[in-house]
Image (cartoon, rainbow, N blue to C red; front, side):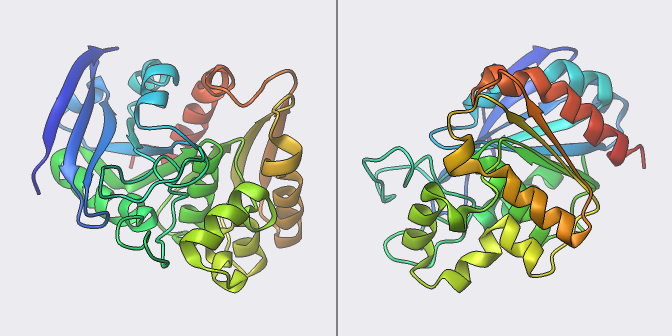
Amino acid sequence: MSLETLSAWKSHGGTQGVYRHASRETGTDMVFSLFVPPQAESGQRLPVVWYLSGLTCTHANVTEKGEYRRACAELGLIFVAPDTSPRGPQVPDDEAYDFGQGAGFYVDATQAPYAAHFRMMSYVADELPALIATRFPADLERQAITGHSMGGHGALTVALARPDRFRSVSAFAPIVAPSQVPWGEKALSRYLGEDRQSWRRHDAVALIEDGARLPEILVDQGGDDAFLAEQLRPDLLERACAEAGIPLTLRIQPGYDHSYFFISTFMADHLRWHAERLGRG
C-alpha cells in the first residue's frame, strides 16, 4: 500500500509527520498525522494512541493545537490523528457544518449517496491500523483510543464494538448518546436510514445498554461547554455505566469550554492515564 509523506518535522526528539494514501474503504485519498517519539530509534515497537477529531476538523486541528508531543515523547507513545471524513469533489457534502465532509461520525453509511465513501468506522478501526502496522514501529497489541466531541463518540463506539482491541479508552466532551441529541439524530438518520434500531451500534449509551463492556472509561468535560446540555449529555453515559458496572471517571472541569484550549489543558493527563494502562509489554 503506497504512502506519501506530505511533511515531517523534528519535535521533542521525535518526528511529527503528515501522510496521504489511497483508501480502499472511502474510495478517496485520506490524510492523517502521526507522531513517532524518540524511543523508536532503539528499534522497539511502541504503543499507539488514536485520536479522533470532532465536527469540522481535519487531522490538523489536534496536530497544531493539541499539545501532545512533549508527553508522547516522555511516555514513548505513537500518536495518530486521522481525518474526520472522506473528502473531494466526488464526495457528497452539505452546506451545514454538522453533516457531510468534516462530519463523518465514524460510521459506515448505508444510505445513498453516502454509502460509497462514508466508511469511517471501517477506515479508522481496520484499514488505517493495518497500514500503520506495516509502515511505522507500532505495537498493535498495545492500543489506546481517545477523541473529542464527535470524535469522542467515535472513540467510545469503536472501543465498545471492539473491546479486545484497546487497552484503554478516554474522551474529551464526547457525544455519548447520538440517538438522543440533534447532532446525532441528523447524522445517523441520513447516513444509516430511519430505522433507529440500526443506530444503536453507533451509540455508546445504547451499546452499553445492549451489553457491550469496557474495563473503565475516562471522560473530561468542560463545565462551561455551550453544547453540554443539548448535544453531549454526559449524564446519560454516567447512568449507563453505573447500571452496567463500568468504572467511569467523569471530570467536569469548571470554566472550560469545547475548544482546544480545554483539550490541550488535559491532554497530558489523558496520555499519562493511557500510558499506565498500555504498559511496556
